[in-house]
Length: 138
Image (cartoon, rainbow, N blue to C red; front, side, top):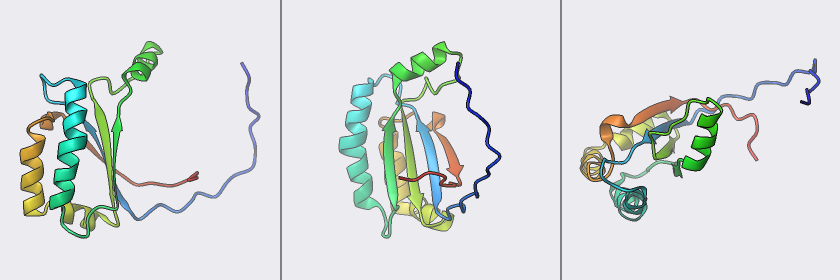
């Protein structure tokens, strides 16, 4: 095994981003295949939500599929994984006030909750508020 030499050199810590980022782990509703889940998510849910999202909306909305194959490999090494989850989503806004202004908009909230009930196990969703310190951002 190769070991890396330790350096006495220190690097400055980059400034924390002021943007608000909310990462959510999402689980599909029982009885849906992954294919059905993602088909609905990408082709129905996101377009419908973008249509009713108040302006200005989020700066970013990224959907990520959790990779079952890599999860299994990592679990084989003893790592804790998100094996019970199907997707992750990150939304970004200029501030927490802006993020919750969109999420709590009455029309948007009602539409989101009604639609998510079709394909998401809402009780299993894990939202994680993030502060980002960008050490490397290519």
